Length: 141
Image (cartoon, rainbow, N blue to C red):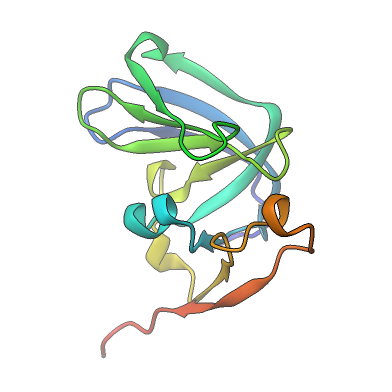
């Protein structure tokens, strides 16, 4: 996979929500998170700057969810339920985009995904974001 590819198209599972995204630094920003919501969702995300996501179709079908401080806003298709992206809590100028929604991309394309410590969030602790570990995928022979 070309880590320098920044412009991508994406959609939810049913195709009702379609979008274009410019990834801030290609796939070099991939990650997962350990916060209560991300832990249950299990998505691998890549970053896009504010204005880097353009909803081409289905904006009216996007629902959002906020929890804890209400700062982060998580978007998902109201028809199929797939999480497409969210505005980040630690830096509201960045959006995290579900890589599984991007055309030609699978979360299993990445052999190692950094996992960030969202349980001890930097906005709660005042400390720099801590890496909690790494998620590894090894294809079966």
